[in-house]
Image (cartoon, rainbow, N blue to C red; front, side, top):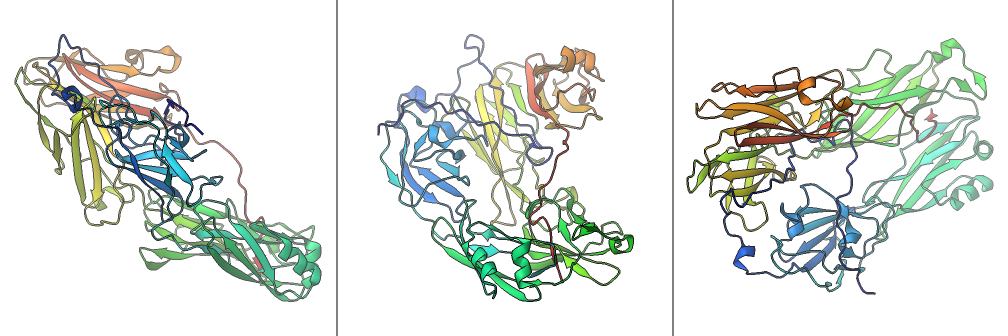
Length: 597
């Protein structure tokens, strides 16, 4: 079939979340427009040299070892992978099918200018040896100065280099009493790649009806009806399950289930059977005990329960167990304050209750994960205009010192390494690089995109940060040097929004003012009407910072804004997103009830 022509790559919307999705650093996207009659001509690029390199060709397509992505490699840098005329904003995603054949609903992202990661969904149907190619006119060379690509040759999707081993979990042994269904959830603890597995169940139960039901079941969450559970009362049965992933790898797990011939208490952990936390946020699990058994309401003394939590697993290759010392005395919740959990923790959680009569019940097992966060690269100052006083070159200072690791508090931050690259804003080859935290770039007048990526200098296994960009507009005029830092996410509606800027006019007696460059304040108010500080024009005081503070109720929740600090030709601009308050909802629990012994 002929590939469709001229696809439109449109970044997919990013949902807002109150915590981890918002970038804690400015993400300026302003694209300054240069006036050719008023500004010097930028440094020549390959495009202006008319070398016209060919469009990149796809040279590799391989499933990643975690089975969750497909990595695509090109033989040259693509125009879509760098800031420029057609380049996508750092971290932006797009629909893979817009640029490549062989994909359907998958989402793609440029890891760098010559590498794309396609994230596979639970409904993905890609298999090893499926054909993948670049659609006609989807890509061009970096700088968009060469031709768009013709339809690419098909490459066959290759299997992983070292596929992650499949591991299956059922939550371990448990008990079930009278008047209860037996619920046993199975899931891939690793090696599933996010796709559904095929399942096969077995049991050693002597009841033919019980055995036939279990072995005919083909889903991931086995639930045996109460009537069949009754046929094995007073015995202990073993139930085994085999799961097979989409690469054909199979793993097994089993659980021993004691079936009591009397009612027993019941307890479960609210929420899903798999919980992912973040080290910079408190980690909380909530349990709930049943107030009825076999349709009868339990007496008050039977509801006086003692709770015991077990949270255990591994972090950094070492065993790790957490007690519940930070929780309230009732222990119905498991609670870890921020930064108490180890980054990279993988394990399980379970709660058991004991009533006044000595009857004990335990919940099903919940899979717990506290993954390491991505490092965050921050370039202080935002988009800037820098005046060169009509000099042939200008020294521009960039500052990445505010970059950080979200997994650690301020006084425990790891040592970071820095990788800077500066290119013409329209694309082209690098004109400057640096590994310093606060480098100085010597640039000819023009408009540039400065990129920063940071890494953990003490741990080479940590992934690098996503790249962050700012626009540096270097002009041949004597203008103030302006920088601006704002909160990347506006705080809750009870707190004002704050920006801090610096204007260095060399003692020339310049003035400054703040502007709302993008977005609309609530009620259509002006920035001057909603600001708690002077927005200007005001005189520059040498060495003194300037502040913009906007009232708490000015920004629409979820709204996108850009604020600018300007001073007689000098300009700095940063973007912010207004936070959205969390909303009420409901939780599903798996299993809906626990088992006891």
